[in-house]
Length: 374
Image (cartoon, rainbow, N blue to C red; front, side, top):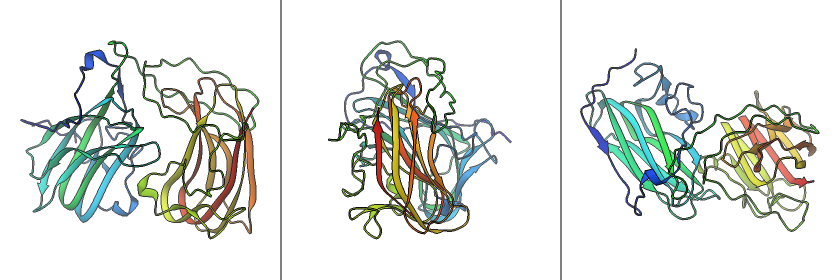
């Protein structure tokens, strides 16, 4: 059933790290995906080991049919989403919470965490710290100006000490640029594009509307080899130039246990879901990228698969599709070559080389990756 709003107050927390410019002078972009949880946990990272405490259900939404729900006893449960953002821009958070039961010492904390391109936290900005039960749904709002070197923002909702019942719904994180027209731009849904790995051409989709001064992430510069787009291709420098969310550090590492050449390789190990690491590089519409590398899967259990993909991206930071390079769904006796080529589709401003495993249950290695452009 859909709950009736009974909020009589608004919880407000504003971070004052720098002066807040007027939104009437700025571009306006909604950054969150699935802020109303209508698509289940899609777009959100909720660790599977907290499945008995945190999840999405339809027991008491603020609107629609679903909400994020924390329920039960435990420690450390959280849900979070990383989104692109830009230094100097302002982000405005808003959302609704319903806390019918809060035990002693229990709190629901909402935070914004600006992060660098290389996965480092710049600061933690607390939007709300709620410790008391509420009489129905109440709105929570807050703002922050993002510090220098911001490339991403992580919205984190956590229950440090679970011992109650809490609902969260209808979340929004709007980014305001500090330059450009005062007109509010129109955002365009991500177009769907299917490309075969060895395609020679790509059919352009309809031209998307691009908000001026949209946040961008600086792609990795071309390395000393003029044809090579990747940096740290053999992981000899650890995970430098690769983006790995901090919460996945227990599953992915640069390891010296196995290597195709040199002394290190990329290692996936353990049991988990939606494990991914990527590097963002320069590319443009019409570029042909030739991808090659080596993979070794000594241990595979269940339905584990290792995937290597190219993800072309628009200059406004949305994906134009996913191009499969290799999928390994069986254990291998030794290192095996992987590779494919693809022409970048219309609208490409950059591309990610992503290495991921939707279900990790075993051990896998990747080494000596190359992405050469023509």
